[in-house]
Length: 369
Image (cartoon, rainbow, N blue to C red; front, top):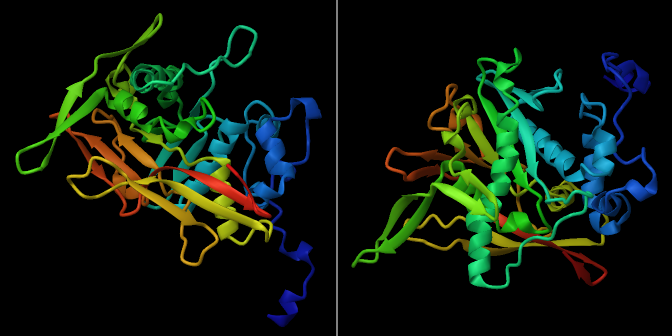
């Protein structure tokens, strides 16, 4: 052992690598094209933990498209970060990630199962010149309700149906395997904190009203939605009711594939500036069967005892009509949701399951979000 440990590094090279190592942070585009969030991660001390945990990850990530780095540094930063998050989350679950094919994004393999994953994101609306169209006003309760009831479901529907139209299940590498569409909302800053309910209503096309009986027991009443309408746009509610959707086994939803997640996980792994302090505030599942509001929490990431996993906060919405059903046990650590015939939703949720959170960064007494 002593002799072998003294051998030079070259003796340990496997020699089976294809192509040069992937470097996410060496610039491949002019400075005026760089995504502002990418610049922050690359240069600011507040994001040092995220940067330092991404750097070793990129040595394991295969750029099968050939444009990952360019998009990561420019207009596709959010989409590529979401893919990187899914890569590490599935790896944490114990899957080998097959990226021989550019489409779909991942084929996840372990001794029990194999399934395919195609990632997508909800992005800002842009006009004909490419400029971002401002979000609709949300100054009143009625405006917020309309935003969640119709505007955001249409945004989710656009992202998911565009993937459905590509018919990935017809490709030889996908045929006969469960197919998951994985979606996250990046439509506006902080939007992912608020739009979970809009996704829930759209994917099954069912809303859930509630009241209490004379003993205070909570009763849930499913209600079919029908359509979502915003301006001149109108879509059918219920992604799994669409033609061909039986070929999609589930939709994976998360609001955790963000820079803040990488910053927290990096800090937990010992990366980042020694001056960095992170405080996480948000809401989580209340397992009380009569609860109608989530639990609010505030956690200091730097404090002893704080724990977090990559797959924490993942939600898998199973297709009741799936041609190739996905077994919940194969995705440990995620919450699983199933639509029952009477319109109720059966959820298998981890004991600790955050709905959404915001991370406050402290550096030398200054705080930023």
